[in-house]
Amino acid sequence: MRTPLVAGNWKMHKTPSEARVWFNEFLDELGPMPEGAEAAILPSFPLLPVAAEELAGSGVFFGAQDVSAHDWGAYTGEVSAYQVADLGAKYAIVGHSERRKYWKEASSLVAEKAKRALEAGLVPIVCVGEELEVRERGEAIPFVVDQLKASLEGVRPERPEGLVVAYEPVWAIGTGKTATAGDAEAMAEAIRSVLAELFGPEFAEEVRVLYGGSIKPENFAEILAGPNVDGGLVGGASLKVDSFLSLVKTALNR
Ligand code: PGA
Image (tube, rainbow, N blue to C red; front, side):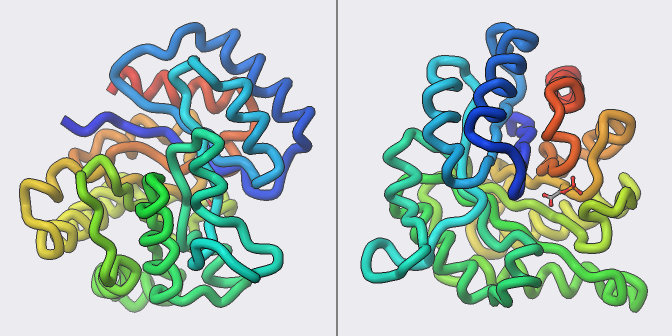
């Protein structure tokens, strides 16, 4: 059984002190994290020690929004997956469309980052997704299939729980536009077929595939109803305690 995951991608928001307030409020309102779903927050690097401190023992996980493709060395400005893992993080996003777009990250680099995350003991959340014109041409599925294969080139998770794939159509991120539940499910199914091809059907059956792109409390239940959609990667709606909590509750009621 795949446990649904609600992962909050805070992007470049909040100071460490604002993060501390958020974690305290969230944990107060959540109480002990119930079984049946997983929640994780992915804040920017300087906030990770705060996440480690505040979330310790809460059952809520945390992770980074990116890691370096290198393990260690003279790479000014980079952050090693080992540094992130040492703080007690569980996850690392790799290949987010904002990194692909603004920093021209290619899928081959994304695969290297996923490998470093795995070597350090982190679970990579590998992001894929098409631009609007690709969807309008009717080529979304083949595009994402190729992008995913390239982003997982040489990536060998030991366990299915050690990998998460997030389908985030670029045109739905931060725009208020969401993929239909049907489109999200169709893509998640295609992603699972790629995983079956790469790692075998039994392994693929246990890998979590998330949807991301303008998830809100109002649309999450419908998206989660797709049998291949195992949760959400959430930007805007993860910044407020109430909306993130409501998403976690939706996942718990799935
Ligand atoms: P959004 O962002 O929920 O604000 O659309 C999602 C993401 O980029 O992960």
